[in-house]
Image (cartoon, rainbow, N blue to C red; front, side):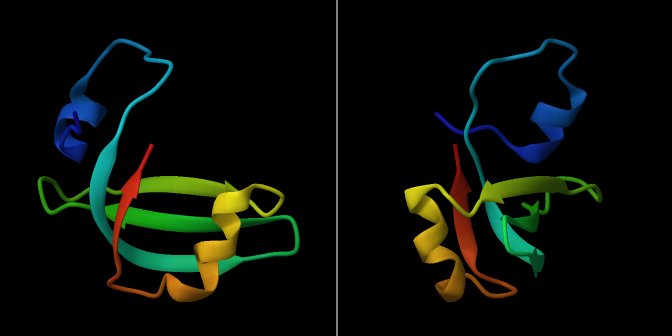
Length: 73
């Protein structure tokens, strides 16, 4: 089950895994990784997601543009 970004940021506990859905506000790429700023509209803050270029999911990066809907695990 996914949680809103405001719930994740308000939580005091550390969880090993969670799922957040939202859209990409900005994307920056380098050789070894990419940084996605993801927001869901539940609060003014955003979540920075780091995608390792060595992972299979990095193959999706060229298709992820500003405004793209994403689900992050």
